[in-house]
Length: 343
Image (cartoon, rainbow, N blue to C red):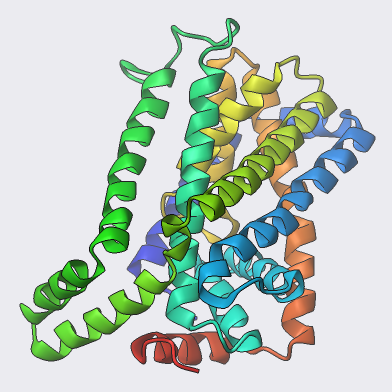
């Protein structure tokens, strides 16, 4: 896969942030990690890996309006491969890979619709993660006077993110409630450049709309919300176990808030695996609670590595077993997207 300027920027940003969090603390971080509890770290890694099968189960509900109840197995394969690709390639290559692998294993699921379902997948992630952050601010132990940057308070971060997600939700529901108008709008916007681009954007938007079916069904939307909540509470539990492994005395709500800070941080361009951004966001989040900087950085590095390895191994295994090649992802997926996702 080619490295464009965005990928190069992400790698540079990751390197800068890794330098920032580790500068002058490498020896101290090593001492902290080497004296931590290995059994609690093992429990942490196990629980952290459990979120990915939960994500596959949620994806089943997201795709139900399009292809019925797809078996969990191909959804798990695609999820593991997608997460592995995110960990080893820049620019979130795993999102495309995840949709492509599923559309290859289940021909009734067009690539564009599978890819669109991932946008809804991330929307539910955002709603629950930000919701848990806001709930964490209600804990009496929440550091209300803490500042993230300048005068920007910790609670302000959660509120700003929730407003942004609200705007995204409005846009998605515009496609759900007025698909004909939105398809025409997409064609007209593309047509400003050329009629061909306008027609192509309409086809892509049509496939994208097909992946939004869950938003039309309140029962399915509730099911997806439930699995998303279980997913992120499980992830917060993994965070909290990592805290315990280092002897960090922090309530569970701290894990809920810090995972939100991390989720917002890794949304920026980064190197493969989000190294640098993850550690910096973890350090910022834990610093708000008055955690010692060396402990905060140690937790970020320890958790990141231990959660990185299992899903990367699983994804690489399935990638090999399904006889996939990188050229499949760089040629087939874009071609299917341009054709509207037809198998």
